[in-house]
Image (tube, rainbow, N blue to C red):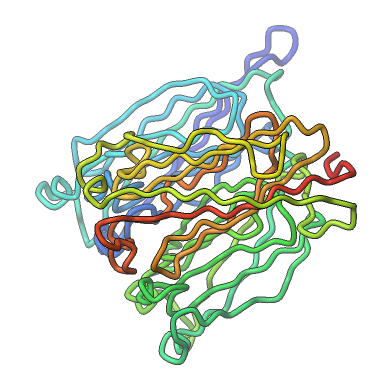
Length: 423
């Protein structure tokens, strides 16, 4: 790897270019061992003269979505924006080479969802000594006036000591709750289920990030397999519990690096301080109104609807309120390519109330134990979405199709707080 700095100095420093490179080596076993959306990264590389700018390679050995399974997806990620970036990524011992140049105001996360297929990797001798090697070259052109500070985001890390014996000792829905941590004024903790949160996911480790209150955050968790950390990450806004019902498979946990059967699960959380924290328990006077919406679809729609086909309820006043309105919108075959094979569900709510209004509730599927909770702030036009509410396969496994129908109920409570709770 190399680094090279070019500074342009007319009379005062206006911009400079920084060239860098990194190599990522991936064990070919991961191509089929990992599921889509599980990824590995290169170490973070810092760009000099930019306090908060760093970059890394992010690779999904088995694709970054169901539609890209069977491909290697590859991206270059940066911590902040405010620059022009040229990147060239090469798969060594092959003719696969991709180049792109773009300008970024926000943090970059771009690349190629289908960088190379598994079929091509297996057929042309690219795999050597059981590994594939990816080389990335980047060139940053950074105007001085766009060097921005990213101090609103800070990261906390904890390591969960996961004993694999608990996969034999506990049953589905048995949870282990880690100690609470306080970070940026937010109490958060990890809750995990060694044999799955639900019976349908008993072959998986389920893991959730929980917080006292509603806060905008980015979460990331990973385990080490053959010396390489494999991660999953998501961004969430205004939720008090989010994570993965299928975090890692039993097979992956058994293969993971361990110390006498104990696996280190590295959990990272980044909290946006500027978004503020909405307490989950308020001491202020408040009034609440509850309502329920039920939608029904038929199993035929799961297989025969196109991705993006949707239906929904009309936007109606909340029972007992002259100020709140809400509706549900659902996509039986998924709202876009990333959600193909899933039911997508979105909640739309609005209010003319001048005081702060929150909406909390639960989504349930009739005839099953399935439920998803949500919390959100309601303003003049607010949305909360579950792009992957439940996969078609899981829906069938848990018995969610009754008499060729799927019945989804959303029970929610609108709460008006008599005093402002936001800065």
